[in-house]
Length: 149
Image (cartoon, rainbow, N blue to C red; front, side):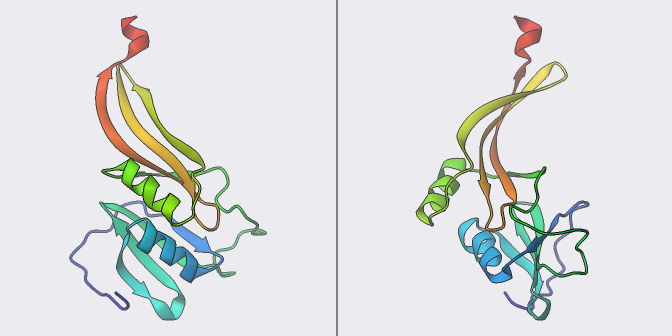
């Protein structure tokens, strides 16, 4: 809600702030399609602090204040933002219904962590400015395959 000043939530220790070429388009994408809620915003500054299931992100209309070099799409080259969700299938359907293509289709991946592997069911999508978002649902852990084969 515009002007929300509810401070009953706790800010994460690391929160990316994405500069947007069109703040309203990005806000619509994150809020109405991806399901993020506005924790607080400053409409006069074209800024919003968003949350979905504990994942937090800030959006702001791009400005020279934060610009360190020339800006050209896709923004955020070299980084992807991993966001845990409950149902990758449902979110992928919502994105496709809204006309967004997935950058990488839903897949199951296992990543080694010491002597264990952690499983993700995941997909990647680019936001309207090209920032790469990796949504995943947790599949739990198992013994690392290369250590047991």
